[in-house]
Length: 455
Ligand code: IFM
Image (cartoon, rainbow, N blue to C red; front, side, top):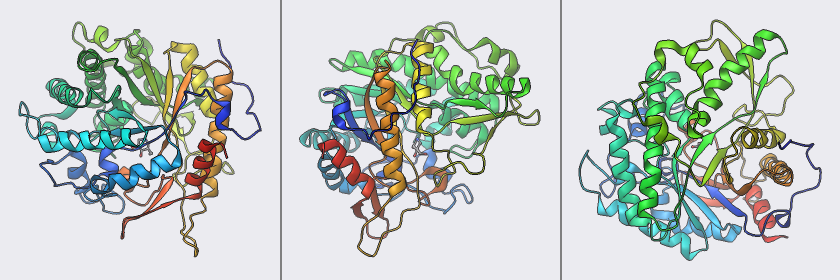
C-alpha cells in the first residue's frame, strides 16, 4: 500500500526524476491540425457539431486551428528547443478512411509518416493516440460508437496506422478519455455528437472499451516491441460533507466516473453496485467482451486536471449525485477548475493501490489561464508556471512514495481549439496568435525548458 505524503516544498528539478523519465507535451489532431478539407480528409463529428449553431461558444471550429498540418516543422522545433524527449499526438481517422470498408488514403498516411519522421529527427519519441474524439461523420450516421460495427471500422483504422507507422512508433494509446467520448458526448451532450441518452452513452463506453481490448493484440501483431495502453481522465473525489447521504452520493459517482472504466480494464467486469443502480441502462455485453477488454496492457495513461467534490442531489439524474463547483476562495483556473497539485499524488496512489496497473504515464496535465501578450511581446503566465511546477513536485512525491510513473506529458504544446469553448480558452505552453499563426513561447514554456535543461 502506498500513501500520499505532504507536498514537498522544494522546487522540482529534472534530476529528481529517473534519467530515462519521459518528458513530453501532448496535443490532438482536431484541436491543432486544421486543413479540415485537404488531401482527402472527410467530415468528422466535431466538424458537424461545431457547424451547429450554439454548440461551440465562439462559433468556431477546427477547420484551421493552429494550421499544424502545414506548420508542424516549426511546432516540433519548439518542442525540441524546449528539451522534450517525447511527444504525444493523435491521428485523425477522417484523414485515413473516407468510407466503411474502403482503402486507406495514401495522402493521410503520408502526412502522419512525415510527422513521425519529423519527431524522430528532433529526438521526440512519438506517442500515437488512435482516437481523440474525431470520429468520421459517416460512421456517426450509422450510429457511431453506439453501433457495434464501429469497433470493426476502428480495428481497420488501427491496422492501417500500425502497419504504416509501426516501424517507427512503438508507443500506442488506443483511446483518449473514454469518459468524454461516452458520457459527455452521448449523455451530457455538450461534446460531439451531442446525444443526451444515458443508455446510449453506456453502450458507447462499452464499445470503446471493447475496441481498446481488441486493438491491443492487433497493435502487438503489427508493431515490433509495441507498448500499448489507454489514457483515462480521472479525478480524486471528495464528499461535500461527511453526511451519510453525501458519502453515498460520492460512491455512486465514483462507481461510474472511475470504476466503470478501470474495473473492466483490470479484469473485474463492470462494478455490480453501479449495475444495480442503472438497471435497464446497462449496456449489451456479448460473451467474450469482458475478457477482451481485460487484455493486459503495457501502461496506463492518466490525465489529471482537478479533484471533484460530490454532493447528494436526488434530482440530479442519473445517479442523484452532483459535482459541485469549487467553493468560494479556492484557487481555480480560467476553466473554473480547482488547482490541487496534491490531488495528482492522491489519485496516483489510489490507482496504484486499487489496480497495480504497472507503469503509468501522466498523458495530460495542464491549466487554462487568460493569457495576455505584454507590450514587450512576452506572455508572463505566472499561474501556469506555478501549476506546472507544483504538479511536478506532487508527481515527484508520488514517485518517491512508490508509484511507478515513468513519464509526463504537459497539456499542451500549443494553445488550441478547446472543444465546446472554441478558442476562448488557452492551455498551451506556446501562445498562438490565431490571426497570424505566430507562435510565442510563454513564460511557462520557458520554465519547462529551463527545468528540462537543468538550468
Ligand atoms: O483539451 C482537452 C483534451 O482534448 C482532453 N483532455 C482535457 C483537455 C483540456 O480540457
